[in-house]
Amino acid sequence: MEKRLKIRISYGPNTAMGPGKADLLEAIIECGSISKAAQKMNMSYRRAWELVNVMNESFISPIIITSHGGSHGGGAFLSDLGLNILQSYRLLEKNMTLSVKKELDYLFNQLK
Amino acid sequence: MEKRLKIRISYGPNTAMGPGKADLLEAIIECGSISKAAQKMNMSYRRAWELVNVMNESFISPIIITSHGGSHGGGAFLSDLGLNILQSYRLLEKNMTLSVKKELDYLFNQLK
Image (tube, rainbow over all chains, first blue to last red; front, side):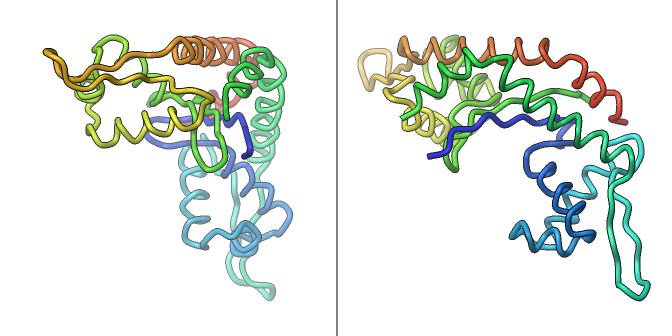
């Protein structure tokens, strides 16, 4: 079974950023819309919107910008803040795993 | 609202160790029983047992040992492996927070 270190930025009762939300942001960048990103992740449209709303309400300004209507229907993209937050989160994940390699190896080795 | 970095050791579909499980282990050490530890954490007895079972089934040998009956009723304590895992997890949490202070400060500062 997969052994993984997962990190979350919790903010009050919510998770402002975590593994699922970071994956969703990357899917939004790739797909250009929330519905297509949700499809790609096998996530319901409703669930994707919940995650988007939690992120947009947690940070000082929106990190996902949506546009409604137009000839191509609604689209979604990341704000500059959103791109910075995603990059920082991925850096955090990577550096953490490296910086605590010893303790992490010990814990992983105790799993069946 | 509280801003916190939370780390989890995921193992397949389960969380083998995380903030709630580590707190429960400390409550078991303090209280000497799963029911009292659950009470202390405002957690149902059923939920505490679920967490104990996930931990005991994830690692190579049990980390919580329970004894049934006797003049003082059932008790619970941590095995040596359990104590080591708890210590490693707390160390991991502390070192991580220190080692990625820059990225973490950035992310925390973007929260409302």
